[in-house]
Image (cartoon, rainbow, N blue to C red; front, side, top):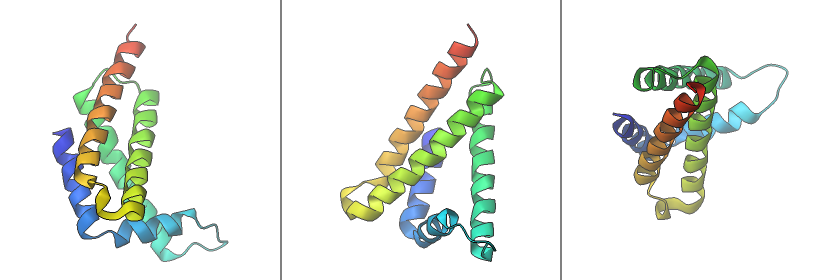
Length: 119
């Protein structure tokens, strides 16, 4: 289930990379008045974070809130990094395979965090 979600996200980014590419640039800008595009991007990003957190809690119910937050932050940041690497290196980066690996590693981290908090 986790890898299927990751695979779907990766394929979406391959098919339409402009949203994330432009969104990341807008998100990093600091202006007195935020452009509408930045606001929309951050809202979409918050929705994605919420879905990741929800899935983490479903799959690993023993995770505490602090661990869910850390895991979600890590998952999103890692996905951003993989996307940026694909943008830099092009087709040399198999984004689908990298997202599948990332999802597996995030899941493993979740189980370890849950085990640690349970002891």
